[in-house]
Length: 486
Image 1 (cartoon, helix red, strand yellow):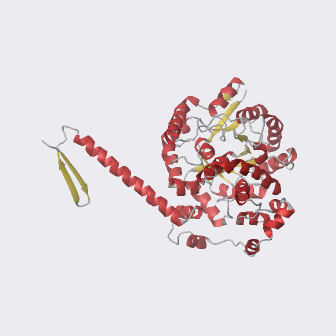
Image 2 (image 1 turned 180 degrees about the horizontal axis):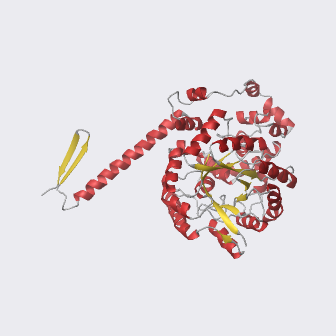
Image 3 (image 1 turned 120 degrees about the vertical axis):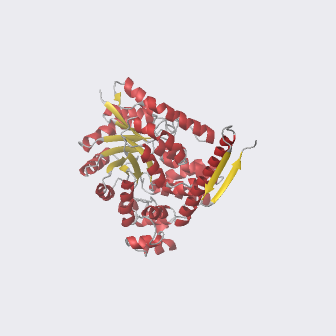
């Protein structure tokens, strides 16, 4: 039987799907070397949705995370995840894209798993060219969706188009947990046959309780590279548990190429953190037929639940999910992946809270209807809905704004001035200079607090020692002396 290899998603998809990107860098560093030593093909460390959350809510520097993890991970490729646009919800200037790839390579990112919201080959091609220039390997996500147009022939054609680009791998990606074992049985052989010599990975979620079974069915079909997470950051809306997949694959006669025993302390580490901080523990999910109607992906549903709860609107979640299914139908069944899942979800929330469908729409929805996110996307919207969106005054204003590619100098002027570093320019682009400055101040306060606490602890320890009679503390030209009592 075959060897089965694994890509770890614990600190990326596990955090995103279960902890609403709430995992702090200090939670990752103690177990980073264990992940490196376990034998993974790659470790997913971050997605381009993380920067804003880390800066604004965690008040952490995303680039510091990459640098610190790379110090501890020197055998396994670190992988970043991104979509068609770098910031997901706005068109990214070319000079920002070029700079981002350059800096990711410099910080130790060796692989990019690339999604295009509509599986559009042109989107794949542009990003692959940039990645190759800086020596980063690209894994093209072939995103699964349910609708009449997402047929076997559709996936055969898109797999061939992806393979023509000669990526490092193709990933059959099921972000919405929409696959069933029966559908994997028919779809996986089609993708494999049309991928040719390009290796194929499999990525799914466990929202409906079928993630493990789908992963094992993918193995039976001939896909031998699987994306999994270490519990308690597996299952629920996250990815299948590494331990469950390994145990079952071994029982099927396969040879998992992973040292699961070195990962047992990783499970203990994150379970203790979850219990201490009141964070969710992944668990097997019950089957939910409604999930196949709204198709909300795992990473989004945890954020949606968190945001509604924070606004005191947790009771609105069932109505929002029902409305998401209706909005998706109105928009011609876009694939529910960033940013389209967020566009659809945000519009559904507005429809529910205002009590009138499409009474309010965002600029992104107007741009989508006007073709700014692609001709296929615009033409798929129900004509009456598109006319409603484009008839308002704001649509006319946006239609007059012609997008021009800015120069690097113009981008620097907009995001921090001529003296801004490349790294801070990118952070400013993701969130804004004010938020980045606040994050830096918070980081410094934490460092000062840790230093003060460490000094107090050292003085207390020395004070208990019978052999220490004097303590001298010098800083610059100032000195404080303490003498033990007789």
